[in-house]
Length: 156
Image 1 (spheres, rainbow, N blue to C red):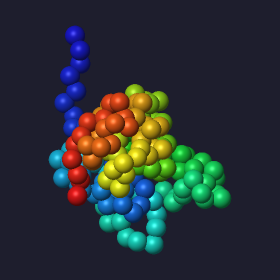
Image 2 (image 1 turned 180 degrees about the vertical axis):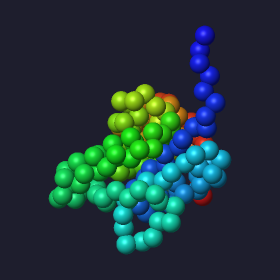
Image 3 (image 1 turned 45 degrees about the horizontal axis):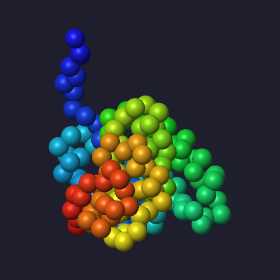
Image 4 (image 1 turned 60 degrees about the horizontal axis):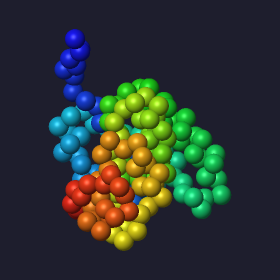
């Protein structure tokens, strides 16, 4: 007989700063309904909903590798402290360590493709679709780039 778990699921919301973060914040009612926490990059702009702040980086950053190593170690710390059941992200690089942790610990990963890419796929989307429990696109036109995508409408 299977064990029943009656605890409320814990949700980790993670994204890079800027537009990805702005989109992710639209899911605050979901974080309020369950137990949720937010992870983003540390920038000069305030992020009042953020609980954890990663180092900001991108593919063109000369110090990307050391920053990603630091972010990965910090992601492990956050993971062990919070023990999320779901990771929900709008991308990008800051979410990658959390994506790998969901695969490793067999948790649920939900990817929401960015609103800013109506007519082309993102690198993050292409990489993270494989293990996504749910892969949501915000434009109908994005469905042709991802075999498991469902149209969820716009977060804005």
